[in-house]
Length: 316
Image 1 (cartoon, rainbow, N blue to C red):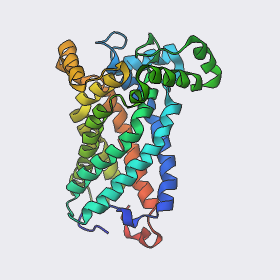
Image 2 (image 1 turned 90 degrees about the vertical axis):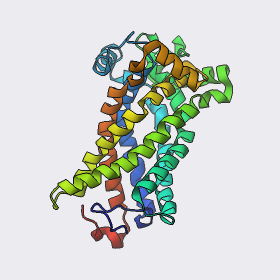
Image 3 (image 1 turned 90 degrees about the horizontal axis):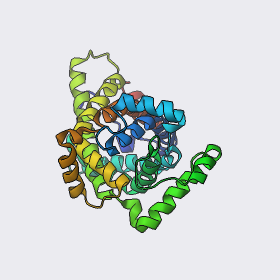
């Protein structure tokens, strides 16, 4: 047990792994369902040229809702649920990496940074092909299609009865025909350059903000409340730092560009520094509730998964 900090951290060796994974799947699915509309809006804003279709986050939300209904906000969601696998890979890698680094250093910031980056590397290797397909599905709808591929009309009609499976098959076939297997890993480097720093920044700042809040809060203040406040602060910090690369990643994957550097240069030339902030408000809006739910869910998950003999040892 780590006793040095005001807010004690539940480590890997403190957990009942069976409970941890059982509750973890449910938690991950719930979070993804809640924030998916904001993810879809963010992706469309990042891919569109200038403000050709949407004027901003709220404008995009209202237009999609009016033109495509609630289903429009969940295009590609069924495919995206397969990222549950990467979610479990992420938390396992994070916790195991923290445990491994503890043998060499007790510095929590170092453990969080290295473990967060390592976890993102593993997760992105699984997630990128799923993201490629789901992002192209996100682009179908109002204004025709904004990506490289277009759903066949027969499957647009069939999808009304078969949800997204016909459209998913069309997208997969078109990606493979155009780029082969490599097409499913288009933007992989850009994803790593986005999400490894994002994860590596998020965890240290999360613990840092939680520590600072604990110094100002009354001693009887629940730790979970402080952690729930620290999560969005860390998410906003990480999102702001990594958003330029996230815009480049979205364009590489959806528009089929092959060079991260050239995409970055083109974006800068066409839309200036403002282009680097595209989708940032949607990203922060989506990351704020995501961070709150994730932190409360993850810390609750770890509390519920504590080994029986340790249950009474933590302030909650």
